[in-house]
Length: 443
Image 1 (cartoon, one colour):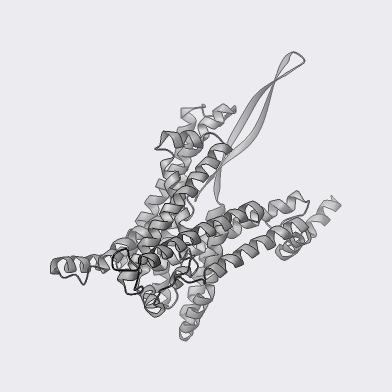
Image 2 (cartoon, rainbow, N blue to C red):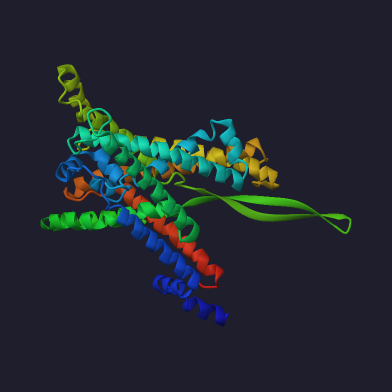
C-alpha cells in the first residue's frame, strides 16, 4: 500500500511525461520525425504559383468567405496561392465521398466487412479519388481567382495553355505531397498524419489572430470577455469530445478440455461517442451556407437586371451579419450530425459483429433487437452532440454580439480540430509511454 501511494504521489505531470518521452530513443525519433515533416509542409506553403497579383489576391480573400474557409485547411497557403494551397482538403472530400458510398455500393460494402485488407483497399480508392478531386478543385479555385482579377494568363481559352496546365499540375502535386507527408507521419511519427497536417496549418495562423486581437486593445472588457468565451468553448469541446455512453456487453465461449465442455464468460462494453461525427457536420454546414451567397455575388453586376436583382437578394439572405444565416447554420449542423453519425454507425455493423463473436447486451436478444436498441441509444445521445455542434457553429456570432469585438474571428471549426488532434495525439503518446512502463499524463 505504501509503495502504491508513493508511486501515485510521484506520478509525472505533462511536462515531465513529455521529457520522459524524449528520453526514449524511439519515441524521440518519432516526435522529431513528426516535427521535421511539419516544417517541410510549412516550407511548401510558401512556394508560390507563378502569375499571381498578390495585392488583388489579398483584397479578394478579405471579401470572400468561401476562400477564407478553404484557407483554414491550408494554413494560409491558399491566401498566398502556393503549391500547397489546397492542403489535404481534396483528400478529406474523397474520404467523405467513399464513406457515403460504402453503404450504397455493394462492392464497397463487401470491402468494408473484410477487416484490415478491406480498409486498406478502401484507403487506396480514397487516394486515387484524391487526384481528380485535387485537379478539379485546383482548376475551380484558379478560375475563380482569374474572374476576380488575381490571375491574368490562366485559362484554356484566352490564356497561356502551358502556364494553366503547370499551375493545375503543381497544385495537384502539392496536395499529393501533403497527403504523402501525412501518411508518413501516421506510419513513422506520432498521431494521425492528416489531422496533424491540418493542425499545423491552423496553428500557423495563430500569430495573425493575435495581431487582430491587439487591434481591439481599446475594447479591453470586450476582448477579455471574448477570451473567456474562447476558454469555455475549449473546455466544453474537451468534455463532449471525451463523452461516451458505455453499453455493457457479455461474451460467452465454449471450451473443450479433457473431453468435457466448459463455458466461460467475460464482460466488456461498447463505447458510443456523444459526438461521433467530429467536425465533419460543421464543414458540410459551412460549405452549404457560404456557397449560394458566394455564387450570387458574381452575378450582382450582370447585364440582365433581373439576374442582378435576384443575385443581390440571395446575397442578402446569406449575409453572415443576419441572424437568419446563423439560424440556418445551426439547423444544418444539427441535421448533418445525425446524418453522418448514422452513416458511420451503419457501416460498423455492431450488432452483427457481436453476434458472430458470441457477445450480447444483457437483457437484449442478439440480432435485430440489439441493432434496434443500439440505434435508440445512439439517437438519444446524438441529440446532445448535435445541439452541442450547433451551438459551437453559431458561437462566433454570439461572441461578437456579447463582446462587440469585430476584429477577431473565433473559428469554432478550427478550435474543434485543434482540440481533437491534441487529445488524440496525447492518447497515442500515453499509450507509447505505458508500453515502456512509464506513467502518462492523462489522469
